[in-house]
Image (cartoon, rainbow, N blue to C red; front, side, top):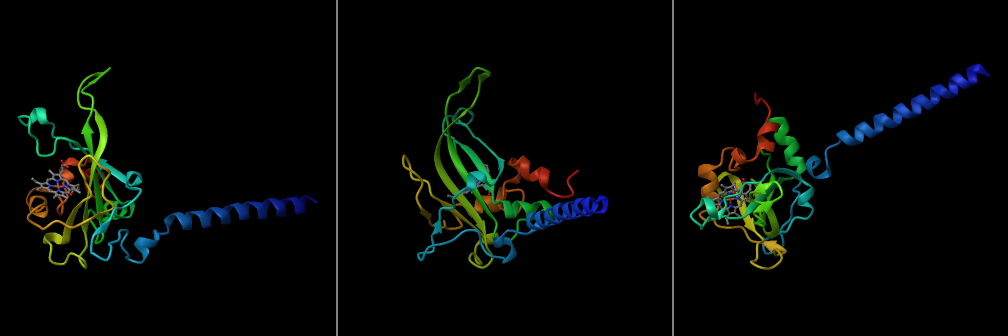
Length: 201
Ligand code: HEC
């Protein structure tokens, strides 16, 4: 009787442990895209990037803002820029401190809304007003500097477009190449990426 109960306890424990091992294995498994070296984004037949979905649930890295008031009333980008990186690529960045082939970052533009809150004067996010993306892809963008290409879905006063064409290098890429801290990406303004970079003191 006693033995039977012990056996039962044992098999239950083993069952639970087995379940845990399976669960851990599952959690450690790379996502399908990462495993096959596939791309997490897609292009249509005209070579336009199809607007990625669900990016607000990717890894959020920072929000630069260059308000008009600090730029003589005419900032080039007066809105907030919420920047996200795909979780697969964030994982690699954390491990290697580099952006892997196939990296995608999204930048969502948000208007400056109220400049007053109960906490004081400042800049507070208003509405979503635009969407941009950048992709590093050595197959598709072989001839782009750094293999990075830049896209916009923004349509003034309307919802972002479903697809976006790559810009020529002298419209976007050149500025990133010249001034971004890490491989064409402005990590100097993204504390989340800096904090995750390996080897950082
Ligand atoms: C005058 C320089 C300049 C030009 C030109 C430029 N950018 Fe940027 N871009 C920046 C800066 C600075 C940041 C980071 C701060 C910010 O977003 O305000 C940035 C950030 C980004 C990001 C977020 C990821 C990253 O690489 O840091 C995307 C996406 C982006 N830009 C897309 C574009 C697109 C699309 C164009 C062309 C239509 C463009 N950029 C042209 C300066 C530039």
